[in-house]
Length: 175
Ligand code: NI
Image (cartoon, rainbow, N blue to C red; front, side, top):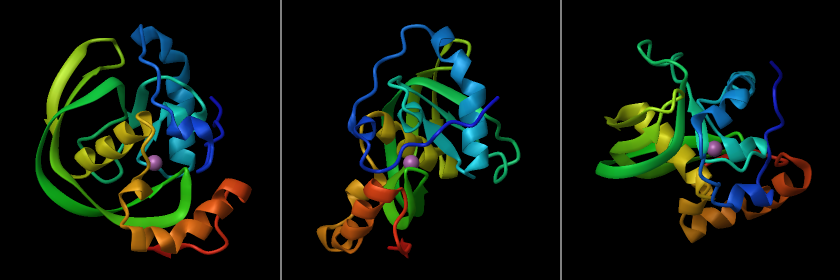
């Protein structure tokens, strides 16, 4: 296994809607490396385009927070239902040192293929719902900072430019 390079804000692949995965077997060669990359960077989820793969799949593992959870692979994930709202602070491996409280749905229903190519559809809530929504956004070219109000966005404009240029902002911020 080897860790992959996580692309940062400013890389055009983060703004592209990823290509559908035709066969679940196509993602198999990347799963272990993506998990290793995510663990090394202490992330809870990683979308394929964050490691420069134009493929519609993501890995999620929150087992360090919820003990009945495990490393999951979601292929061609699509949110098919939403319920309620919740606010939670988010960060992103592609937008380092910037954190912000974002409002999203409390629960989501997700249609996807699992790592064996079997179609699944179920509801997720809590932290899992949050991570799923963040990663599905990535796969559609959306970043959590897109949800900030113009005023809050103004506070990170310079930092985003610094990330695009050097990979990290000169100072971090929590919004
Ligand atoms: Ni992210």
